[in-house]
Image (cartoon, rainbow, N blue to C red):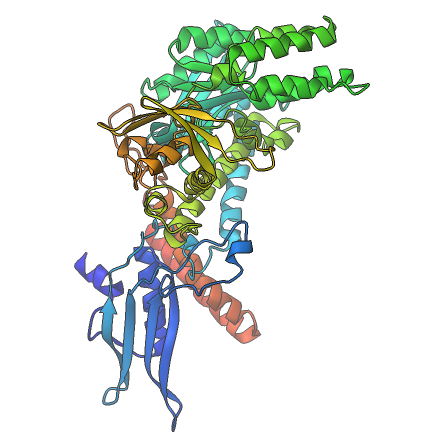
Length: 603
């Protein structure tokens, strides 16, 4: 192992034949360790034009110059320079005519990236052709299975294949008395890990019309620490019965070791609601606001005439009113305008405690009350739901969507390691928040802090502050808040309940903290699931084994490494007939040797 490390870790005195060889070694080192690289200055001998020294740096070296336009920029670019001192300097040895390492600094002042080297700045990207080949082979295999076994058995073969690749993969089947498959639910390692970290708030949605078999496709989703969508589980259901939903919810919890979400959002569906009451009685149930808005337009927009905005009145009932009495008065007024002409209004009223802001403001929602989480993930699959694909082909497309979703998270991890959000005010609490929170959450926190700068203390009674917004034009939508501050244990609680709901301190509370000369965020108000270290937790599966989030990561990285080696030389050889033929013959010879040596060995 030490010899392998010696191959790529620079050291003082190590020699290279050329500058390009040293640069390749530095880039390879950055790829393996997890940082981007760039070139700096070099010196040449003027007489013979030979490079005598060269400096290679981390891509985070230096500082960005001051941009005088920053105060006009709504979304300033993230900081990519942190003043990192990691470097490698080589110098030409006149006697040996080789380049020797004369300086090497390995310490970085910023987080290193995960070993997904194809996302590190300055590293070559994986050619898409490698991924296309893999998917093409999988498609062909699935088609053959369907032809040979039929849909149900082929689906089981599909699950068996995943179980071989992923030791933590789980699937459950619900069968009828005749032995036919009625419901299926499954989870990948990625889903298990994501739920263990971010399964506090879940949205469950179902899409119907899945190809010729007309299965219902159900999906469990949530938000990760970047406020991006992550998938926790998927199901195929034969119908919308209470029994089917009960089975799916029960098996979903079983797949995740019995852990129940704090809050779950669904469409309005009586069978689903009854199933949740039985399976997750202690979980807060909310209705997806996006679906309610769609139904609002569907059922109420026809009454918008003669200056009467019925849909606007209903949306005000959804979001505007803080107190229950305000809501009831507004809803009764809406009833009066419709005079019983739309039954949906009464149906949705019966579920008001699951959607109206005045009832849901105390619910732990992470702010995804109307985030369209499941809608946006399932929109990518609608094209496949309505076409005449067999079940297994549909599942293959879902796997691709799952992989793309995972890649987006990896990209966000990579960006977080190489870029810092810009500070709008250089104050201690924002500097600390930038270190703690992921970029997206920091931006939300910084926006609240900005609002606190325009707020003022309207009154103080005992330990309760009344915080209001300075409103010169009388047009602000920001409402006052009553903030209770306890100096002894540094607890702060606001009537708006933003922290309890979303896990981020509100501008009312931040104003009081500033008034009380508190310059850092009290630790109890830093929700770990929003921090950069939210994923630093070991997850085990039902058998007690550590779950490897991406079991095929090493395979893909080795594949990418081979492709990176071959692609440049293939591109170069293809420019010349003789070189192309030479390389082709050599590759065929290597292929034959490989097959003779490894053809009969297990993968």
